[in-house]
Image (cartoon, rainbow over all chains, first blue to last red; front, side, top):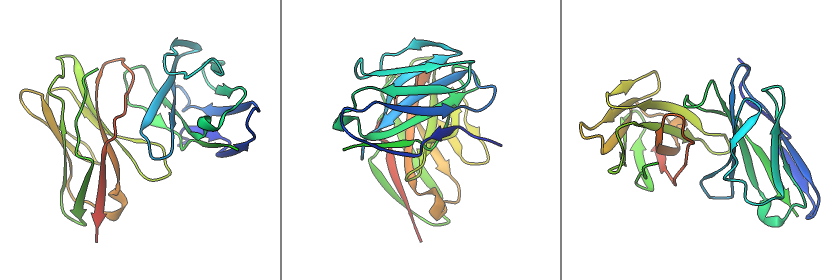
Length: 113
Length: 109
């Protein structure tokens, strides 16, 4: 069956440009999460959606980062005016409901030059 | 959420059981123990979780001590494909997963 799909798988962008990362969760999963993983580091929580609402945005590192989810399905993570320290793998996960096991995609590797 | 402590790395011979320990001495009564693993260049993969009782599924077994202050993930017959970073996470039902540094398991031929 289809798992969590993320696109693009790789993105190289110049410093100062905006980027959009997309996540297609597993069909029927109401909860959606964004994490990022810098080279050689652990996973850092960014934001959590329940349906289209984001009750926990506590992990977004700055106001350059935003995310939305529409139709209780696809989510987009937007990074404005990218900086080199934004380079990381951005991982999306979904779960059937809050509190059930997460299913992760394979991430988008973002490189800011 | 309670903090966990895991050894940074472990080795295991192929075909033998891999026993990965986790300490969570400050766990509270309503917190679950979850295990995930991350194979290189992939997203984390859910393995198993439990509250009080030992659990077993097709991937692994989870042994939780009676006082719930520690647990062990057991891969009964490790293969080379089990080489990964294994994360032990303690979480309230409905809480968000906070990943630590995990244990890097190397399965050797």
